[in-house]
Length: 362
Image 1: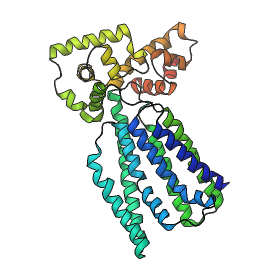
Image 2 (image 1 turned 180 degrees about the horizontal axis):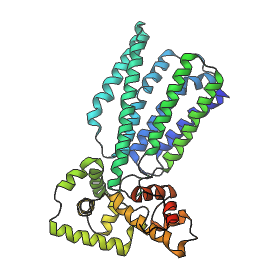
Image 3 (image 1 turned 90 degrees about the vertical axis):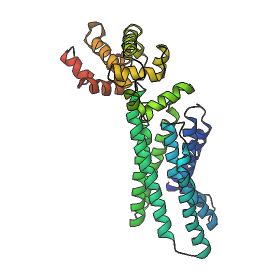
């Protein structure tokens, strides 16, 4: 049974890597390509076991060293993938020393062990550990920063906040720690089987979310560049800098307010800064300035306050008494019951169900 699980883990990672690199949905291209490379590198951690199961009992030590060297790149590859998810226009030049420096040092330790018989295992293990910890930590911080900044340009952040990548990193770290403890304490096969099943479950989790991940940023180059500027820490600079005059700001504020009440663009659950700015015939830069400075809010809260107000009206109207919470959520512009409950409570301090029970007109 353990052999079957190992084969399934290896083959699933290779298949997912192929799907990610070929990217049939044509979304987040750079990020998906690098994530596919990461999955391939992860699959190499089961290479030796699968090779032995396949009958390749005497594996050339050089092949093992090459596999170990390639495994070293997996945290870096994951970090690059996450970087491109959060900013597809990112320039990797500043990471060039890490791309060649640390791997070369690690490769030299492997070569010296193989050719000269030096016992450099402690050094190579420390290099591997520090390298992995550095890039995994950087990846987690980058995801959490991205989650906060998506509110500058998106009204629904569930599909673009990369929460699933954070869960994957935590799952894989947990599995790695448990595997290390079990290896050190020489626990038996049953526990290894459970870890294998946990790993396989994590891979299925990766597959589901990877294939369902939407394009995070607008496809139009001009819109993408402006939204990226807002979503990568430049929003406060834009707020401080006058994009339009005071008179023009008042005019644009009235225009936006009127448009929101008449056209109700917030009922589109996929509306984002680029889409709304196009409808208003403004640039994302200008619309963001109006919302931040004129309404003193970010885009996420600005749109969702309209949705919450719509939901509150529907929850108190007799005609909608028979509607489920999910139906109310869709009618108000939310794309799921989870986002409806979370956002409603964030803005009003209570859940939609509590609001309905109170019969309040908050």
